Image 1: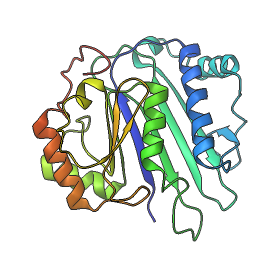
Image 2: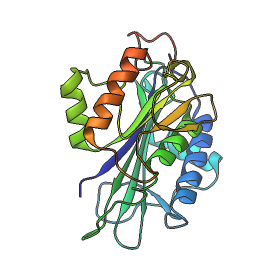
Image 3: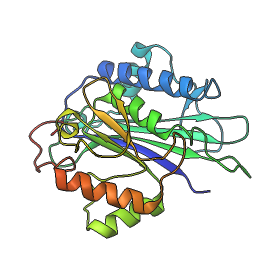
Length: 242
């Protein structure tokens, strides 16, 4: 089984390492909760084969580590990045990659969560909680758009609608910030998960935890695009969200 991705995006929003660390703390706690306690140990994701150091539980210590790892002169423009990983006993693991805090108006900032199955496993960790993961990302990071997908779905939607890389699009679930959510048609069929900052997760599955088929996703993208809910952001961006 290929990796599953849950991602959110937003545009220029200046934030200190401390502010970002507090968002990180909220997100990792929520992912641990969604895993029913399987993902209790988060470590820095390093390049070698061994486990990285434990991620600090204190937001202050996390902020210090974030600053130490991002010393480039233009960090206030391009933002701070960090990678962490949580592993299950069966070898499945979850990677979290965040780029945030900068003022660059020409490319989005993001949180990307990748779910990898263990050897011989039939499903990735949290694969039945994709809409809930998307809501957790939205609650923690107050983004503009987001979605859950795998590589094949992403390629199919991109090809079907001729989308550029940063353009909003549908996945198995889709997140829309408050102004976008207001444009969702009243008769749009989806499970709706309101989020903390006024946005909305639309889960296209027939039943929670299931995976919608590709035709359902393509039809949903068409309906949301026609309603204006997936309107691309202007570049340079005029704010972090539409």
